[in-house]
Image (cartoon, rainbow, N blue to C red):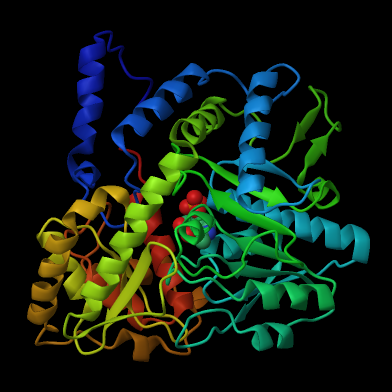
Length: 476
Ligand SMILES: Cc1ncc(COP(=O)(O)O)c(C=O)c1O
């Protein structure tokens, strides 16, 4: 395809774009229990208006567009206040949780190199830490050291983390809350561990940190998890999740400027303008930060407490409802609005497909390190009206779910011990085809695929997913 012929008719242009939505998740009806966050309509309107108002301003140079920097500084100040940060704490706006987590690892790596001479850095991660940290390790050449968690509560095992510390360790990671099970790691103990070994501690609050202080204020039991805990040196918190701001929007926060300094990229070694960027992007729209500033101020403390109250009560109903369904089991004790449950005797991924057939989106999660395959639910404000219907359908789908009569070949057993790096792309494509995936066609049902991925060693699953994506993104 060369450049396309002009479509001067705006209506025709936009109607073609609308047609692309045909296969999308219809999230506006509130039946999506993951991936979207249920932003109230008026909040969406305000966010979009603010986004458009600053769409073209460039955050690249704060001396040219101080407005964008001012809004960023105000957003960061709100977030620091929300998370008990001391005077002198700082932070930056980023394009999402992944970038916030990655920036914290980059700062830790560069600080360790500058202050301790560490050239082979290691990051200690409970297996429940978000994949964003794995990405950071891959991008920044940091060795990831994975540590098991408690098999019943799914919170980080502090003794196991201490045992993993070496002279090359640069940082410990804890979650508040973890995505998979919605639980808070023992941050106080991790803070003590960090202080004892002179290490940094990053608390990943991308999905939980906005809600936790609100839940605490509403009377829920919330363990200490933020900057008020000695030893916590940085935190990440997404605004595009339960801050209900438009994507992309997150913050990475540091206890002090001395640490944040290592996050910053600065370059005067070329012929163009001087470049100094706090985060990944160089040119960046002022839209996301303006939208976040507007939404934070528009919803305000009272509005956030109201939204949190609905989610807290709704989550309690959902958890009690799932526990009452014969055959289902909630994993750990959800501490925000995220719930994971498994079915010990039933094929869980077939339950997810059956729910999809009834118009729900629920999110399958593969089993890993003592966490069985399960379904994840995010209890969002716009889902609350559907709680009873969801639970009724879940009970019926669970009762009806059966494994297929003929089991496929046990690829997990066949491939155990095989190095995925030795397998060529064509073989991966063949395995994907066995699960019903060919080319860029998206499958209607996912149970076969999820069961296959779940049975494979994770290193294989990763390579299969890489091949899958490589097939999916092809020029139209
Ligand atoms: C705990 C946690 N950290 C990091 C992330 C990554 O966030 P994003 O998808 O915005 O990059 C998520 C996303 O759900 C998360 O739950």
